[in-house]
Amino acid sequence: MPDFKYKGKIYYNPVQLVMEQIGGTWKAPILWRLKDQTLRYGELRKDIPHISDKMLTTQLRDLEADGYISRKVYAVVPPKTEYSLTDRGRDMMELIKIIRNYGIKMIEENAT
Image 1 (spheres, rainbow, N blue to C red):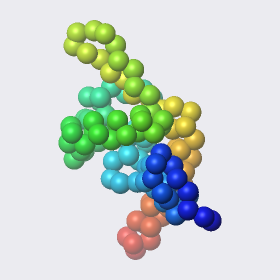
Image 2: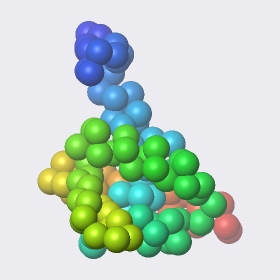
Image 3: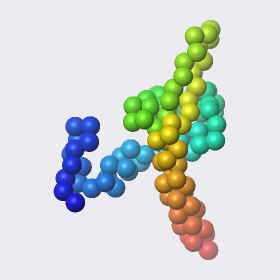
Image 4: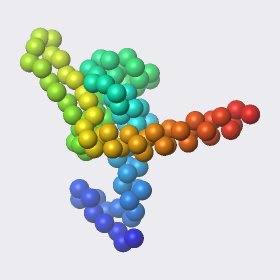
């Protein structure tokens, strides 16, 4: 496959593009927690151990910019912000489920 550009960056294959979109430590766990429900920032923060506020904010912004989640802000005091999957995010969940199941299989194989 020839090189291609996506959002101004050159990629060498489509797997590289997808892994950059959802790779890393935190994006898949964030998407996983949103798969069945809408959550507020604080709920995500409590449910994802070891993630810092700065990292959660950065990852949520990236996922929103890439179209995987939507962010809804309510004009109340204190401010209320909710996150949910978009159609694109729901499509990505199919891939995340496959990767997760493969990871579980690898863990189980190493446990024996």
